Image (tube, rainbow, N blue to C red; front, side):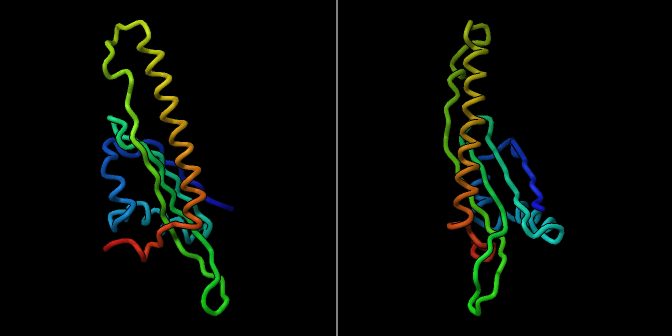
Length: 139
């Protein structure tokens, strides 16, 4: 059985999250994975994030990938992958009293959620083929 963690909006200031995904600072997500792996070696950690300026908006995945070792044995390894983009909030220049403010804000928040879902799907695909092994992260 796969254990699935989904941490939506885990960072108030997610602008530094891209650094966490590509350097040894990703220790928090890798540590969570390492805690879960002994309980379920098919664990998947899914994260969706944005900061208050919606720059970046993104997702990341930490999961087990399996490949054939040098001697033909099955090797399981933890990998991490992230995708992110920038979005511009159209309600920033609007007043709270504007007639369409609520609708514009609601539509934008829905588009943020949809974008995160698309990015998460990309991460789930790419972590299998292009994922960074924990050993390959910069120290």
